[in-house]
Length: 618
Image (spheres, rainbow, N blue to C red):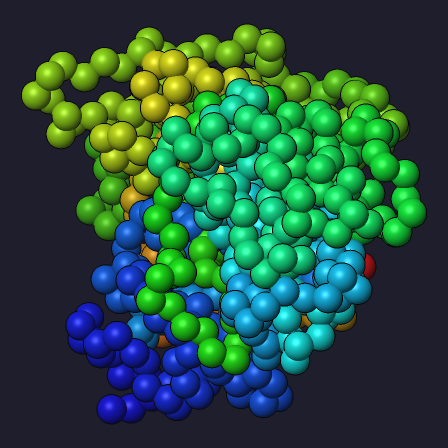
């Protein structure tokens, strides 16, 4: 078998020597579970060791598995911290047709394996606590809640607790601008280490305080060598968390800290992981829970949702020397990272040719400029300054929701289509777009773009009320200046045949190159557009190079006109060239997309588009 020869779906291992995307070469499989495999690989150019987490062939099309897989990629993408396993790439191997994550190879043992041999010393526990708490603080500052802090997800390289790594962000919830926001709390985590709010107490409001509680249970295990018995039935999980557990076996030097970390009420726990990372012997017996803001607690609580299946469960998984968490990030829609597909809706207009299909005049737009005093930065903070933003005549405060969908008994087969229609017809305001990417009779994965999470929270509650279950809603937040691009996308309907953008990374640093390809465009003209965080649209079509069945491109890290915030890369296909899509100089987004829609309408031209999101890092 050649290195990249496809293998039968019953085969549960990729042979050593197999090359993935021409970037990595597999050395050996070091872990396997019911849904995926973990491999030790090396980077071909440098020889550096890499950990690859790959879905099994029969799981490559599984919506829940892909959702979890992508969730981890997005969570790790924005968490550059020495105590958190590093993420390099998420993509699909084109020959094997299997999604995989390329991550840091951590040569070490899990904390749970180490604790099976006995407790750590008090001094080692303090060092470990500071290391893990500092990493989780970095995550919380970026709006990421881990929700599965446990000994299995802490790796100790070479037995040195000061080099501990936090892994497995697959069920992490993001709550802040600059990356995917997961709307909806839901139960997540290993039942023995989850917080009271994760099992239904305190309105299911899962925040950074939940990770504090879980870390407290981990520290008990570290000090005693025995985990607190916090598991059992759902009733037992709740009852055991209504009071502070017995801490009589804990060293008195740290017992007051653990007593606060394990308070049932999140409001009574330490204000942040920074308090725990900075704790020293002799610190005050109590912290002021309100002393610092909880970066991830500001989001409104949302109803719970069922747990998605883990990629690799703890049972039956041995990771050997390299241990990496296996899970995922919300979002489907194609190969690569965060792909959204839209096109103009079909209409009953005779096609101009049998090749290009039906044509539809785009909806008319009425755009004007207004001035806002707050500009949203890519890091989620507000900057008090004036910035021109696009605004339409619709009232953004009014959220129009379609009537509830109540399927008649015996008519469940058609429910997914009705749910998709509900989502597609929902109007959340001007800078708001949602797309149903995975829908079943009782589950829905929905993705979107917007400048604020508020309308998505409103949608989340409306969906739960009208459909009877909670959807998982992923939000990719943009700047106000990019809102015309979001409106452009919302004015086009969905269609399966649309261009697909694949990127080698979602982060572009100064001096580096971002490579990508465009596929699935048939015989149509392809235009490549970059919408900067400043709201300027620049044509990059001159970068496109023809391949066998795709177009390739490379973008340098020092492009003019782009800031350091979120960048939108859009591929637009048309049956013939539209001059408005080939502006010679950068143009404001509101004017650019208005001209494009107007020209398409005048000439009865259909447009299909896909969008991807990456960030420029200084």
